[in-house]
Length: 426
Image (tube, rainbow, N blue to C red; front, side):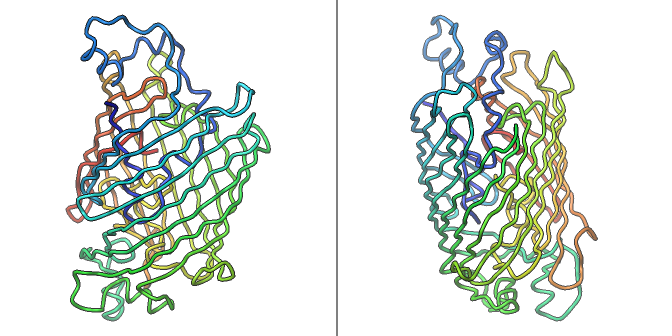
């Protein structure tokens, strides 16, 4: 039985919609196939299963072909959600006759976690012939449990009692339960080789928000919502999306070289049902350097992700922060939204290296820093919080460079944990 560990969807279940088919881009995945000879020097999870079930079977002599529809367990684990179990169906095929056309994919999943999270989604990432158009979207409905540590970066910003609770310099843990719905659709048009422009809509609706642990109404969610005119129990954040994206990555799942850059504007508008107007700038930049032509798996990878409120007001649970990037993988070492603010900046560097000669086992070391403003007087970039760790990788599918990932990460305030997932964090 094939086992899938869905880390990205795991984070999404806590706070926001998931795109388990990596809606950020699949534009260069088709160019990433190693040669057949190189593939047959590698050993992956499928080879292990065959060796166990058919120990005297003949080795494959052809390159793996993408399957049509696969139904698999959806298992994940991290400190934010606990342990997740569910079922997932994935479909993929190429549309059109142009050989450069990237594969279109779709997925659906239903799951439950040990922390009481229920999650269901359907999403898609479709490329038309020759990649002229790309359609990305999802539908999500969920019962979520979100860890909450207030706003800011874990430093005392002064102020009155409400400011102190909202700033939460000591990182006291709150827990917010809610019901969450999301409908999102974006359309991209390729205007030059690797350069895409896109636009779309996103409807983020949250209902029945409540803190079932606190015995006082003075919680960060209530204080923030009262200050900015939001109902602390319900809101809608419905917005227009505009993106400019450029990519030269040789593979989406595990890049050896190339660049990925995306700049987007989100404009929440009351005329499409948003509780408040808001304009937000979101940036995502990634760069990969292979250190060896003989063993290209030796890679230095860099990632920067930021989100900045330009005007208006965002609901409390929509503030950018730890783990709020598109794949929900930032800030290993901390639970999701451990740090957050109206302005948020995150950077990470990682060294990836093979351990065994057949590339079945590899490893990573990583270090990250993040900074955020608070709601009082601490600006962005004044304080930074570090995180880091080490990890092992098991080659899950050599044809697509898919890895099974186990990371141990740690940060400040005694934060630490194991993070189980599929594919690299970025």
